[in-house]
Length: 127
Image 1: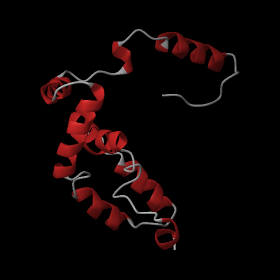
Image 2 (image 1 turned 90 degrees about the horizontal axis):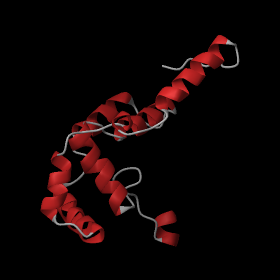
Image 3 (image 1 turned 60 degrees about the vertical axis):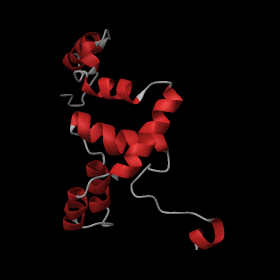
């Protein structure tokens, strides 16, 4: 009904309607960081009974992103960012970093949480 009446179309994965998000979640995250966002999405579908665990595992065996589409999307992304394909490849090869590699208030926040836990203002279990 949605397809007929409004021209809605099903995308290959969650948030793949946006080119940048599709590239980031389908190509960059899995290859650079080993993180496949489909795992979280499928987990929620399993918990709500919309997908079986076996179906999810089968889906995860496939690549999240078609290589031909990835190549096209890389070209568009490079054009939008004003960089060359070799620039993008160089960024990809850079060492992985986390928020801890940059100046932030993480240590201060952790100390404040511990103090709040000590005085009984915070009861959540932070790791």
